[in-house]
Length: 251
Image (cartoon, rainbow, N blue to C red; front, top):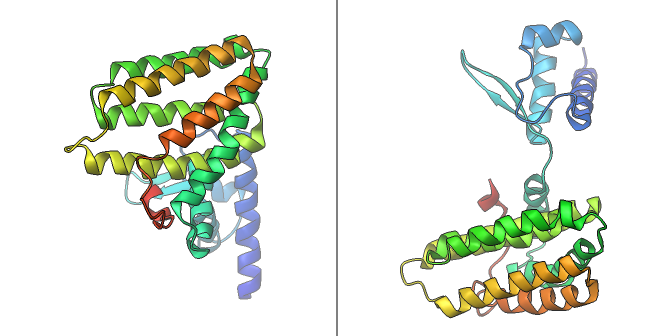
């Protein structure tokens, strides 16, 4: 068999398995059947099958575990996977983290406005935002924890906006910024320069955003979210804005 034929067969098997993962037929976190069972469904050589698995693993759709307790774990694509790929492109283009922050200042308020426009927001949006906000208030004395819950709140404004393309693309940017901000919080936790008044003020704005979404006031929530995000991004952003996007921190 030619190298081209070998690769084509492997890509065919990978495509068949990929379609089952994307359709949900193979659930996130599930184990693929054993290799022998799959090769009965896909009658190809062992090297061809393993190349197909390598393709899927490179796409982060499976994780192959070696050894007696081995197998392949299924992973449905997520914003984190997109963020890693996007981070690679940004790193190649020498994009700095302040450019990610600027993009979010444009996109996240639009997502918050879409949350306010959802007819089902009282059922599909507000309970989750209130749950996250309660955890933020519970952890307000601990910098790393409160930053984590703050980022979860901002990520939820995107994840709950109801627009799938925005959820994927903006969600990837959120992942890049969240990893940066959480890393900053961990590094400075001992000196802890973020005063309690700032954390309380941020929590108050989160509550205001929740109230505006509840009221369905898309214009007001867009404005408040934009102002809040611009203020919240100041602390972890380097003064010179020259820190480049590093996709390795997402792995």
